[in-house]
Length: 378
Length: 250
Ligand SMILES: Nc1ncnc2c1ncn2[C@@H]1O[C@H](COP(=O)(O)OP(=O)(O)OP(=O)(O)O)[C@@H](O)[C@H]1O
Ligand SMILES: [Mg+2]
Image (cartoon, rainbow over all chains, first blue to last red):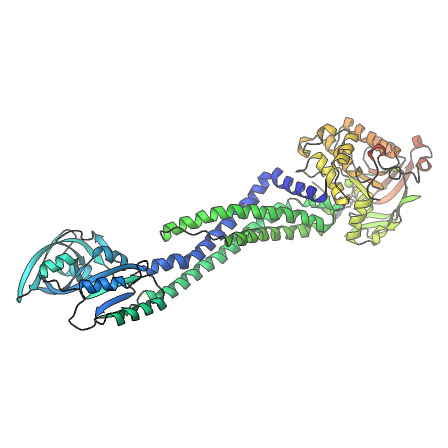
């Protein structure tokens, strides 16, 4: 048997036959690695996850008619839709506005496509239901408060038809809308309803689009569409898109901070556990010294154990850490996380490094003492 | 020829003189017992001879080398190459089997050799228990394992600090039997004991009291035993433990 085999035999025996002790140390390392791997995964994933989240968060380009009083026809709309790469288009919502009266008060009514609204304005908070059939409306919170409308109640909308006459239509309130913006003063209905009550098919006043492209690409796209369609003015909306970057950086910095703090804390935990485990073995260190082992080879024994323990605990941590990140991501962002292989060597390296370092300090202290002192008493 | 010369050695702890100007010699092949009441400095002198502790004053010359002048690192090497240690509390590594415990001594000395380690265990009557962990061995068996470990590298000097202190009579006999064999093969032994029967087996008994050397008693039964010891044909020189082959390093 050569020395290397004996070395491995000693290390594996120490790990396997002192199982109950080692499991505590292993647990400490594994928990540390779990938290590190989990947080690091989330840290890397945030820009990707939240990027998608943000890009689908509200419109980032709108189309307006070039001239006041004009509107955008169905044909133009189809053409506009065609010039946006299909894979990049999240949603494109038409709006047609008309002046109406409810309880003799002037309001603005909008005809829109509620399916598309979900994509371009996912922040719309609706109490009740989204209108799904003829004669149903979504009422802004302010408007509802003013006219005393509630979910399920009826409202009467007066609108000016072709020949200066006001006509009244009855609608059912499907839901109440909250956005924090001026949408709360509007009443929304389907495009079909709008055409029915106004008696005209006039086209649209505005289209709101959500497009999955970078700021640069968007600019190019808007220039292209603008030059190809003289009747339409594309405009980039920076409302959400602009703050996207800052919010992401801040969020990521927060996670980074938490990761560092937690990593520091777990390092301390792992280190104290390992130290306790080694201090328990002072006698063994003294004995090895008495048998003529050099400080270097005793340190080597513990280094080997720490290395294996670190790898083992790190491996467990990678598995559990991914599940942890997955659960967090699912609960917080409602998305799954990606597995980042880069984190494997980093996690293993950190856990092995911390474990070894934590062993070395007490081993060093024990080897510095005369073996007679260490072996004394019982 | 003196294998060991202890000259005017003192050990001072604070204002306590654990050893006070102790001098004695041990010849190669001799078997010496150290006796004395508790706290008289027996373990202290053994630890200094074994290079596990340092003397406050005086010199200890082991095999021609003044170990009181050596650095910690060299002391480790001297321990490894020249000394076999047997402790009252055994000090076996609890996660290694009997044979592995013996191999650890080989590992730090030169090369682990399982066959040789098993042979050493057989010699102390532990062949059947070689694969047991210390916790599965009786006190006597653990001590014999310790002895096998102390012998395995053919040390010039075997130091045993109360080797039978934790053993019953039957096991004490077995251990003494092994010591006798070792002595017959030319090993040099220093054994600390409280037990007069154990001391009587030795050629000489050094008696310590309050850290001072009180007297040296020659054992009549051995006659002029010091001269009996084979000088050049030590057990190591003969090829170690007789039938167990040549030592690898010397
Ligand atoms: N590290 C130490 N610090 C202070 N005093 C010590 C130390 N080691 C030993 N002593 C003292 O030195 C004296 C001799 O101790 P030693 O262990 O050599 O006694 P001993 O003869 O082996 O006793 P026993 O038969 O009980 O084992 C004792 O009074 C002990 O208290
Ligand atoms: Mg003692």
